[in-house]
Image (cartoon, rainbow, N blue to C red):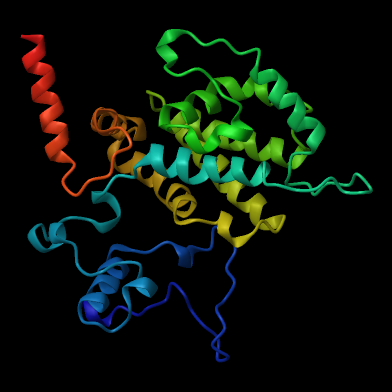
Length: 283
């Protein structure tokens, strides 16, 4: 039965050119049968993994025939939403640009005068110790922001850094929509109304970017996953925040701290040596 499911998610006209689909097109959402069909095609070498977006049937679905492709895996929401969507938006807003001679900036970039205000406001911020690292200007140091830095900036610090009137109207609207989504998906608690509001905010976020002609690189896999999956995941499994990957990320940071910036073939060996040395000294 799986092999008879047609490939309908990327239909092409007779010319062979890809069909342009708007945000929300139902053809962008795959059923479990379509997901399995795609995996079978990859296994049988009928199309390349790059085109299909997978390398074959998951081991989970070979062992657990009842597993749902769409509901079995949870979205890594901190990576997908904070890193994948938020970081991309901030990088786009602050992209390098010379001052236009007529002073007419595009609606999707922060003018230089506003950037100077943002830089000055960064000097006023003093964070309590539980926040971790001190705040650095998002324009110049966003590449070094860790996951919790993005969470703190989005939910708390941006309210001051992006005071009303700082961002152009389009960017302010996009940022408000993004903050609404993050405040729901990355914080404890779940109600159907809040879940629907967050999902609508993400959908409107993507729709606005398409309407105003944002570059194709902004429409990433992460944005697609967040728009299409987070609401369905909450309906199937409960609050997205209950499955956040911060615990794993914290453990990874322990390893990164122990290793520093060294590059080696077997990183577990120097980490173990350092750990045993620390234990011996402590005793």
